[in-house]
Length: 419
Image (cartoon, rainbow, N blue to C red; front, side, top):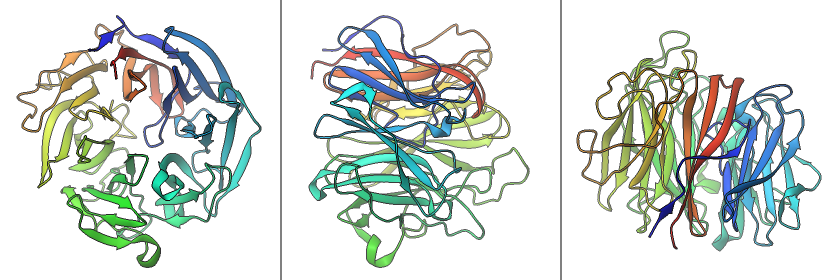
């Protein structure tokens, strides 16, 4: 049985995030812990804490008081076995280091001193995933040659090893594959990634599982070993969607037919599901969902995503998000009718639906979560947490002009799942 509190609650005021770092929020006991970067003044990196049992904000802490108003700088979190929380954050390709802080005695509002973890290259986008069977905590980020890169820790993020080039671009010039990750916490990390930035190339979408130091296809076929054979290349991985392969043509426009990954999840059988966007034009994006059914990929269009958030980053959409425990539960942000693409006034609203393997854009019934939002206010970048008996659907609401010009609150719904 699931019960829902009517209407969205405010979890954190003035804290923006991008979507290529995770976890941006965690459920820790009965608390929701959320990170973000203020969109004004010096851009403080902040943490908000919300009591899920009592349905109220309990406080706000500052990780770094002057961290630039850039939503790429938002922290990622890891709940350590000893009850403390690790925060990892970095400036948007501005420094060759990560910054980390640990909570004091597990209190998410009390943080110990900041430490710096030096890297060989400028970095951005921390992604923290545990492989407990191997005794490793992974930090996956953009580093070596602007490519996905790996750091490993054997002590829960206190010390870190050397950088390892994780995914390599195969295109001429400096290109940056964009990756999203979902791990089971024990032995497998699901990875979905593109060839490059969609502004530069008509991206295809690729998948691999990472476990035991090696890369595998969805059917379990081994691809290669990372340490012995080097980083994974797109032409070695499993192609889920074929993009146009065309170069970008002008500043501020993505290459036609380019994919960009938004969300990765896996079902009870361990099968991966990938939510992503497809660029048709600045005024026409589509959301697609690729699901592995144990034998093949089922890739289909599931919704109209509407216009880009702004022209210079023309593949920025409101985003599609999959429930980490139930990937058929899908949440999207769009400024058009998700089923038809009809104009709805230009305001991004949140919708949700159950999307089964045989469903596509024609058969899905999208339920509005938000409606009648003022014209200059956006509801974007949904995130779903499902843990400790709570399913929390969060999103960013407010003014968003660019990734350095925004004022966004994190709001959402809390549902008691009974499990």
